[in-house]
Image (cartoon, rainbow, N blue to C red):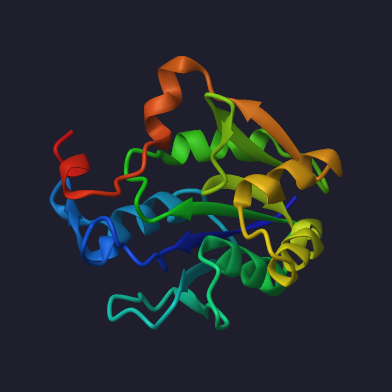
Length: 188
C-alpha cells in the first residue's frame, strides 16, 4: 500500500471568526503543526485543500482548490481522491491539533488494500482524521452530485461498500480527535 496526505484547510471558520489555519496553538500556526504531523508519516505527496490559495502554502505541498460551489470538506476530499496516484489518502483537518502522527500511523496500519479506516467517537464518524482508499473516489463524487453533502452519509456508504472500516476510538484516545472551532476551544 502507498499513501498521500491531505491537509483540509478550506473551512469558512464562521464560529472562530477568522481563518483557523493561521491561529497559533502551542506557539505555532495550526497549518504548520498539522503539516509537520503529516510529514512525519512519510507520504509520497502532500496536498493542501482550500477554497482559495493560502499565503502560507509551503513548497512541498500541492494545492487543491475546491470547485465552486464548495461543499466543504466533501469537495476537498473528492478532488484529492481524484488526484492521488497512491492506493490510500491520509486526511487531517487543520483544526485538530491534538492529533498525533502515531495515531494516524495506527489508522494506516488498520487499513487494507482497497479499504480505509474512519474512526468513530460516540457513534459518530470522525471523517477528518481518517484513511481513505483511492477506490472511494466514486462514492465522494456521487455525494457531490447529489443533495446530501454530509460526510457521515458518505462514510456510512463507504462502510456498506466495504471501502472503509469504522473503527471505535478507545476512550483514552478520544481527545486526539477534538477539533477547535471557537475561540474558547483554544483555552484547553
